[in-house]
Length: 448
Image 1 (cartoon, rainbow, N blue to C red):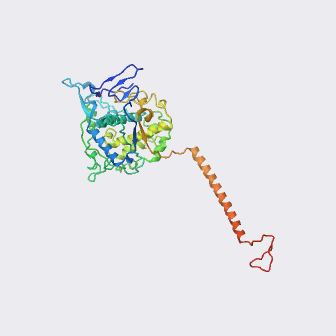
Image 2: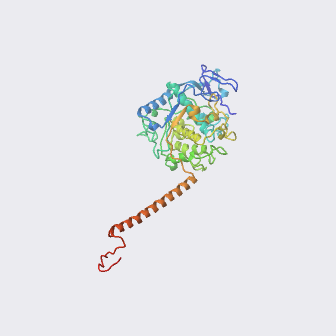
Image 3: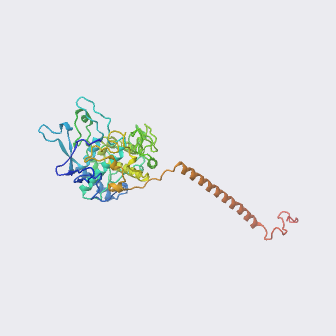
């Protein structure tokens, strides 16, 4: 079983006591107890479409994010050196404080970072603990949940909920890139955020990838350059100049299998691979396709489009809450239980019972493969697109429609015939046919 490396440490005043396998764990400062995400003490948080929030709700949300960016995490510090060098020359531990939001960024970076194999050795890049496998959805689900819980504690508001961005409605526009939300485009630099947005002052972490890969250094809390963003600006790739569409969401929700062999980015007819965006929304794998989650990231065309940096742009969390909402809706529609999740043969870290790296205390993929409202303490308010019809339903609707049309035509024809008959009768004398009458043109001739 994959265990989280020793790159996270809880402060000395946080106590975690574990009992035997069959006993209930006693936790303080922990997010996971007794085999399930701990929800005691937290009200059911309702995640809503960020565009439907009131002006005041938007202001509160943006302010809370900025506060999380500036607030030191009360429980967790991060390692600044590899485990073999965790004790410095003076025997002091090489840990560092980090803010609540930067921990969110750092955790994601660590899950995708290359493995440093030593001086002079090329770093190993074949392992990704949070993408291109079944764990994509469960890993990001817990990633978001951890941030949401941390912000609830920071705000002392157990009802605080992360909103979502329905990325299937914007077309070729970033409809949340406004100064009251994620920041408009700067008038002076097309790749920068407007100075009217608080996010223009944010700086990214985990940017020195070359140093991490060649020198063995580790991403720390050092901030560097500003967030970059140029939605729909990648003219070299027209495919990523538009966001996903509502029918793409509807199509992927109809896929029956959660994941299929080889449980990777090449899987076909896999809900996970379609929502992640390596397969077409309908399921078939196509190496050229980038859809749904992947397409939304690439559309941002900047910090948010680079895997190791993407959480630095706060749009990341709104994008992923909607991805998680789709996951939760799929679980509901297909009444899926944990047996739908691959037990083995998935990439490293992605099997059902594997721990998700680098979360601490350990959390298994299986623990996140549950209904959010029933087990994780939050729910969604989403207006889902109409469900796509099956072939049988299409045939049935076509036949019924044809019969209705035939019936309407028949009824109309009958009415026309009757109308003509009635019209003729209204032009006849009041006397019936058994009485003689005169023809207008031959008045001397009896015609009846």
